[in-house]
Length: 66
Image (cartoon, rainbow, N blue to C red; front, side, top):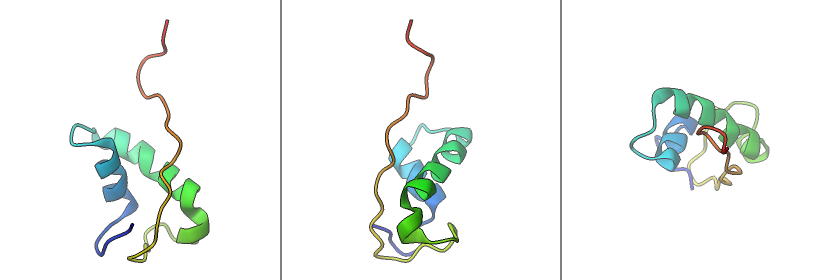
């Protein structure tokens, strides 16, 4: 659930964990937006506290398995 002061960046960073690099967060927050556009609306920078967001589908960020 969105709390006052949250942004898609902070939500994505929290989801990825403390070791997430800025480039990983930059790649992740748009996925949160795309997966929740119906509840966020046209402005990803305007989250409303209390909005419930769905976690995006997991993707693999490391090297491809051999």
